[in-house]
Length: 111
Length: 112
View (cartoon, rainbow over the protein chains, first blue to last red):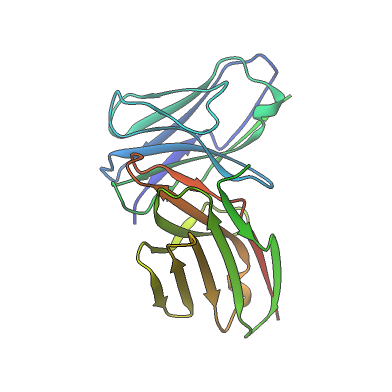
């Protein structure tokens, strides 16, 4: 089974704080994604990438940066966290045209 | 407005009954639909996918697609309590680097 791990699993920060969410996949997939999940909105795509050094803008990118350092590692950065970014964040990976495999999620609370 | 609309928002069916979930895209460039299932406190997992007109069956699950209306539906027969979950529909836009747009989901509860 494809493996995607995320860290931390839970994070609490204050408004204006810096947060980095980490994702690693060991599936040799080219594509990686960051989503946020909020009640009533399903999954919304923040950023995605199709290889190391590549970054594509998703549907809700404001307030987020991302960086893909290797094929395995994809990071999501919140440089000035706001309470509106309190959410459940999922990372996923896939091959082109194939199903996306999701990590366990990171619950972020911004006070 | 979300480009992928799911209905109903929630659904309750008796154990052994049939559950029918709907999904429509407003983007005519969709070339692939996916159905994901997310149990409470877990991450989404792919259930079925479809890109051709018609029907696809896997066990108790059947997916239909009408490409002209960009409508897909998921039917679960002989529903079990373990089917209780959030069902997410996703649409892939042609040429979009594998980008998926998800609907808000249908929450299914199967009551014993």
